Image (cartoon, rainbow, N blue to C red; front, side, top):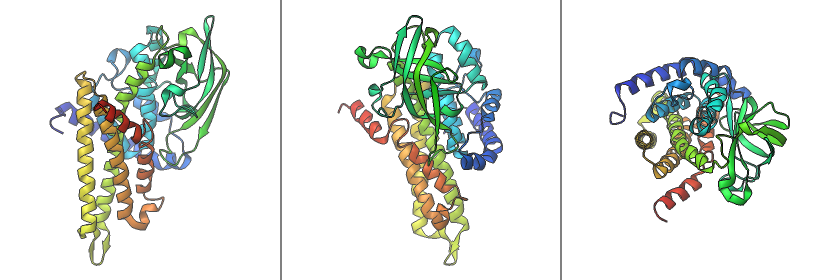
Length: 378
């Protein structure tokens, strides 16, 4: 990592690893079993400066670079991807639009408290009939004097059951196509809002839900910024977050690799550790190679962000490769564990469930290939 890391990066990695191993790891088993995110973590991480780390110090953020953020993401996901998923939904998706385009009043009311962990945010984009095809969302916000009347439904929304506000995408002018999609900061306690918790196979310790908006009245001050039309901002946010999600997947892959390596060294069959058999040692070698490649792709893309360079190609490439690598590594880890790999008291099955979420979430592998092909001129 020397080409990408400064001395401060190494120090930060040790700090966040220590925090994750001492503060997060003891909470994982219960959170996974109950499918509940421990909300107190937001406040604790906010106090330590581990939420919304890239925002400037003037708002209470740590003001760190993208390299530091992906370090944090990898270390969190190495312990628990469910926790990292809720962190990402809050620290990037639900807050980035306010930071980039919000009014000073919106930053004071929502961004600063979110950075402190005093309030929790969720990003509401996906709908029952609109996943990869963002432009096909049906939610609408119709202007009525100083208010908008919001109707629609959202699904697969990270943090929805525990959120204090929803960063919500809806059409304000359908005639403009995707340019007519706007973002609103929607307090979760407004009349007309119903939230239903969803239960998942992967990232179980991250609360996920469906949201229904029925004639929900929003004051015009809840529109992000001062003008309608935020589709470009949504795409910018999602593109950068792909690099972050790729870092998450490197963390999951690393956790699966470490578990498999230790097991291969300790499990004895036919008179020797199974890692001495070529069938197993080659699996371990391929796992290590894939993780190294994914990690280097993530850090090279993060460096482009820090240099202020556009990187839609690199973002999709590293998200595709890292998520597919995490699935492959976790699947091989289960194979190395044998029967124990599918027992709930061992973590490797969790690593596979969590990795599979992100060949779908944040843009499917198929969508990433479409983006890559388009960037290559096809």
